[in-house]
Each structure stands twice: as C-alpha cells, then as structure tokens.
Length: 174
Ligand code: GUN
Image (cartoon, helix red, strand yellow):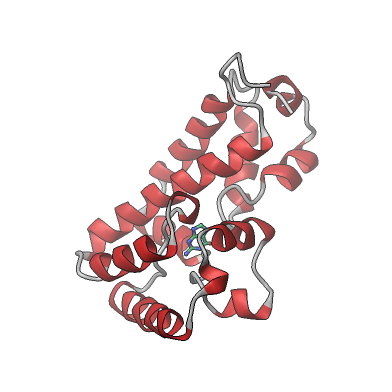
C-alpha cells in the first residue's frame, strides 16, 4: 500500500489496518486519522509521535502499560497480538532456556515493581542476550528516564510496524 492508498482509506479501515502500530492503542490511530492527507509515511509517523509527545506523563505511562511483558504470560498463553508475537519470536523470546526464562521473569517483575509499568524495548532491533542486558541495566534508571526511554522504544516499534504496512518514502523501494 502506498501513501495515496492510505489517505483514501475510510476511518474504519484505517483503524483496522493501523490500529496496533502502537501496541493495543487504537485510540492513537483514531486520533491521527483527522490529520489526513499525509504527505508521506514519515508524515503519518510524525503525527503519531506528536500525539504521543502531547500526552501527559500519565498517558505516556498508560501506553507503556498496554505492552505485554517480553517472554511473559501472554506469550505462553498464546494471547499476544500478531505483531508482538512476531517481534518476540524474532528476538528469540519464545526460545529461552530455563535459566534465561527465569532471569527474564525475575527482571520483568523487578522492573514493573520499581516503575509501575512494563519494560518496553524494540525487540526487532535486538536479540535475547542484548534484551536481558538492557533489562538488567535499565532497572537501575530513574523513573522519568525510563518513562522517556520506554516511549522512545514505542516509537521505534511503531516505525517498524508502519514500514511493514506502507511502502516507504524512498523512491527505489517497491
Ligand atoms: N517490543 C516489541 N514488541 C514488544 C511488546 O509487545 N512488548 C514489549 N515489552 N516489548 C516489545
């Protein structure tokens, strides 16, 4: 789909297709629809990022809370969104050994206890060793630093999800 096709979508189709570019936050997609027509995929991405940036801190934390734990309960019970399942699988989250799985669970819990929202990282830009290292390091941060860092990761996840749905702006990419 190119950006002209995106701009021609009725609201319902737009939300059906793009509703999960920010995990379980279709309200963001619903809000940016008003900003059509988008000049490019980057313009659509910018509209989403601007909406997120304009939220109060509680709203940003709400976005983080919509994310499932990596290698968490939803993965084991098969209730992840398709996007999250693919991203987690690609980062090896569905193939942790017993030791890695228990370390991951312990650190995820420690992180959530400390900050009140889950650890979010762009899994597709990482692998299991790196994710475990980042999780352990980021547990040491201040809450405001982690809130901002988590939102940066949400934006990276969003960018990759958008790129999977819309032809990128580069003219040589078909
Ligand atoms: N990174 C990519 N997808 C996800 C997700 O669904 N949850 C978390 N915590 N991180 C992610």
